[in-house]
Amino acid sequence: MAPVSGVPVGWAVTKVGRVSEPDARGTLGTVRNAVLLLELLSEGPAFQQLTDLAERSGLSVPTVHRLLRSLVLSDLVEQDPTSSRYGLGPEVARLAQRYLARQPILGALAPYLVPLRDSIGQTVHVAVLVRGSVVYVDRVDGADGGLYRDTHRVHAALETAAGRILASRGTEDGWRRALESVDAEQRSRLGTERDGWSAAPYLVTEGGSAQEPSEVAVPIVDGHGHTVAALAATAPPVTSEEQLDRIAAQLSRAAHAAGRALGHG
Amino acid sequence: MAPVSGVPVGWAVTKVGRVSEPDARGTLGTVRNAVLLLELLSEGPAFQQLTDLAERSGLSVPTVHRLLRSLVLSDLVEQDPTSSRYGLGPEVARLAQRYLARQPILGALAPYLVPLRDSIGQTVHVAVLVRGSVVYVDRVDGADGGLYRDTHRVHAALETAAGRILASRGTEDGWRRALESVDAEQRSRLGTERDGWSAAPYLVTEGGSAQEPSEVAVPIVDGHGHTVAALAATAPPVTSEEQLDRIAAQLSRAAHAAGRALGHG
DNA sequence: TATTGCTTTTCACATAGTGCAATCTTAGAG
DNA sequence: CTCTAAGATTGCACTATGTGAAAAGCAATA
Image 1 (cartoon, protein in one colour):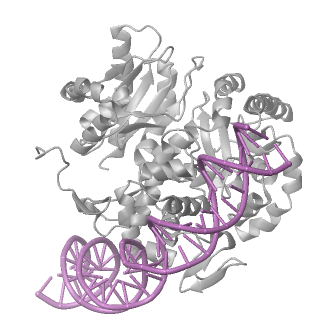
Image 2 (cartoon, each protein chain N blue to C red):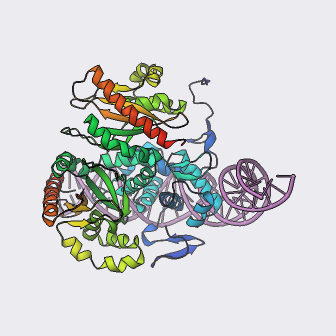
C-alpha cells in the first residue's frame, strides 16, 4: 500500500522499490505484489488502467501486467473486454461468502436478527473491523422505504458508530490503522475520543449525508472479553434519548446472547 | 466442439507435474499457487493443516508455508494462534464488499428488493454464477420465522433454482463448470435438462433438506441479452401453481426493470 | 495516414522462489 | 514427568522463474 515515497516509519528499503518489514522475512514478493494490486483495485473506480496501477504500485508496467494476467486467470480480477481495464473479479465474492458462512459469530447471531428487526422495526447490521475499515457483513432490512439502501458497505472505521465501537475496543494496532484511514484534520479531533467510545455501552452517529439515517451500535463480546463484532441498527428519523436507549438495550440483549452462545472463540 | 479424447483439448504437460493451458502463458506460478491455496482453504473445514494443504496442492511443505505466510501478512489468510492451522482471512470479505458495492446489477436492483419482499412476503435473493457455483450476493429477509436463515450461501450451481437459471442460460464454459461441480451420478440426470431450464420463464426447486424452503428464480437479462444474475424468492410452505406463477411474475417485473435500468453492461 | 496513449510481448539477466534436509515446537502416550 | 511423533518452521544451495528495458501491437483521434 505504500509506494516508495512516503514510507511509514520503521521500514527499511533494501533494493529498488522493495520494502521489508520485520515480520516479512521468508515472505514472497510476488504474493505481496499481487495482493497490493488487489488492494489498489479495491480503491477508486471499478476498472482501472494498467499504467495507472503500475505507477501507483511502484512496479514496472510489464510486471503489473503479468500479475494481473495471472489474477484474471483465477477470476480474482476481471478485465473489461472493451476498455481492457482491470477490476476486481467475482471470485472474491465467492471466497468471501465461504469465509463468512463459517464465521461463528454470524452463526450465533443469525437466530436473533430477524426478531430484532421486527421488534425495532429498523434495518439491523453486523459489522467487523478489517484493517482500519468497518465492513458490514450481515444485514436484515427493515420495513422503511429503503430508498437509501446502501448495501455492501465499507467505511473508514471511525466514520460510523459500529466502526468506532470496534476500533476503540480492539487492539492497539487496529486503532492505529483506523486512525490512518481518516483525513489528517479529523485525526486529531477523533483521536482523543477513544476512551469515551470504548467505555460507552452504545454509540450513535448521525447520518453524514442527506437522508442517510443515524446508526446505533453495540459491541459483541466473546468469552475472552474481546469485541469480535458490532451489532447496529438504523435509527428512526427523529429519535429521543429514550428511544435510543431502548433500541440499544434490545441490541445489547441479542449481542450478549450471541456472545454467550459463542463461548470462547 | 467435440473433445478428441478424454483429455481436455489443448493442454500440454511441460515439466514434472506442471501443466500449462493455452491462455496461461506469461503467467506467474507463484500467483497461481497462492490462489490455489485460497481455493483449497475455501473448501472443507474453516481451518486446515499445513501438511494437508501441501498434500492437496501438490506443493512442497516449505513452499506452502511461505505462500501462506505471505497471505497471512495481508489478512487474506488467518492463522489460528492455538492450533496454528490456516483459514481464509477477513480481508477477503473487505475485497468482496468493495467489489459488490460497485456491481451495476446490484445497484439497479436495490430499489426494488424491499418492495418485492413486502409484496411477496418472503425472503428475496440475488444470485450470480461464479466458476460453477451460485453465490447469493444480496438478500432481503422476509417476515417468516427465519429459523433456517442460512446466510452467505454458496452452492453447486445445479442444486438451486437460481443456479440452474444462471448456468443453463450462461456460457458454454459456465455450464461445463457447473456440471463438473456435481456428483457423477447426478451429472447424467441433470445434464439433459439444460434446454428446458434455459427456456422456462422461471424455475422452482423444493428445499432439499428438512425445513429448507422452496425457491422460485427468474433471470435478470441485460441489454445484450446476457443473463447477468438471478432474482429468487423463497416460497411459502405449501404453494399452488397459481401462487408460484404470481410470485414469478412479480420477480420478473423487477428483473426486467433492473435489466432495463442497467442498459448495456 | 501520422500521432498519441495505452496494452502486450520479447529477451537476457540475476533476483527470488524452490525442494531437500535439518531444527524447533507442541501434544499425547506411557 | 520424559519420550515420541506429528507438524510447523528455518537454512541453504540451485536454478527455475520472475524481473525491467525496450520494442512491438493496437486503438483511438485528428
